[in-house]
Amino acid sequence: MTRNASIISIEPAAPDSPEAAACLNAYFTELATRFEGGFDPEAGAASPDTAMAPPAGAFLIAWLDGRAVGCGGVKLLEPGIGEIKRMWIAPDVRGIGLSRHLLGAIEDAARDLGFITVRLDTNRTLIEARALYAKTGYVEITRYNDNPYADHFFEKTL
Image 1 (cartoon, one colour):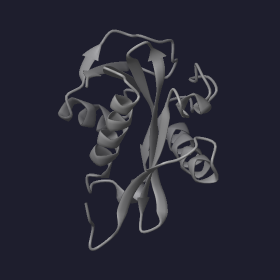
Image 2 (cartoon, one colour):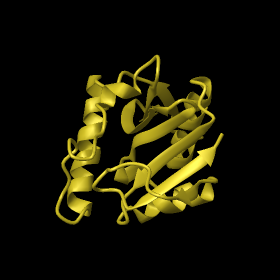
Image 3 (cartoon, one colour):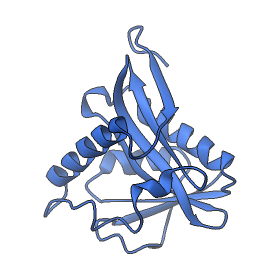
Image 4 (cartoon, rainbow, N blue to C red):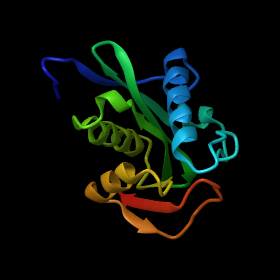
């Protein structure tokens, strides 16, 4: 995938690395402005982001020309089922297909971890995310967690 000869890559990273922290901080800041009532990352986290580290999880960073512009990960939810969390793309690089590419890489990581199914949740204000999930084969399911910010829940068989 290129954007005017730009170099895009998606690489595994530690969820507590400086690059991950920068992406996650930008993501949380955006959510705080988009969600009614703001956003507290601790309120919606049933487990720490380190749950997306090997051997039971994976965290990926999307790079564009050497700049970290996105992230996302997968963690063990229950045997055979992974949960995709913290998927975000920087606003200034949206619209070039990077989110679909990142989601595919996260799904590949989930397969490599032995997950048969992945689930995720999202907020009603994240219309773009809901559209992406629908276009990539996710089906809406009933609530599966107690995330106070989640209004929509999705699942996909890998």
